[in-house]
Length: 96
Image (cartoon, rainbow, N blue to C red; front, side):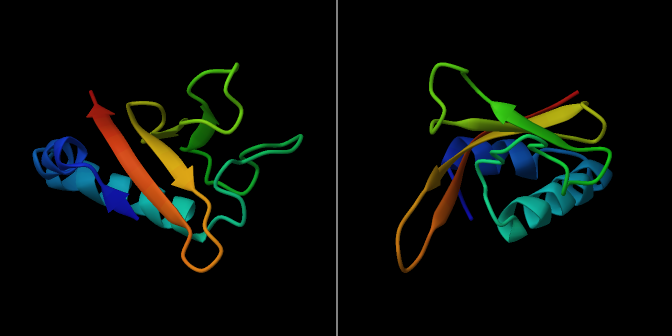
């Protein structure tokens, strides 16, 4: 997983307990069989405090939003599908 400089700076500015929640969300995302979370139960494999949805419903393979910490925070990411080394890029992080 890679981070844009803006997203990394936002992550580093968060309180420690929030960074831990974000790291848990990151681990779920990195180990997901399908980072797009497609299918009927899109986020059934995630913990109860997390959910995923498309950033725009008109762009099904575009950016996704992963909500964490029971909806108090979210990160927007894109998945670059490559044969040898798939890549997840976090573009934005927010928490309140």
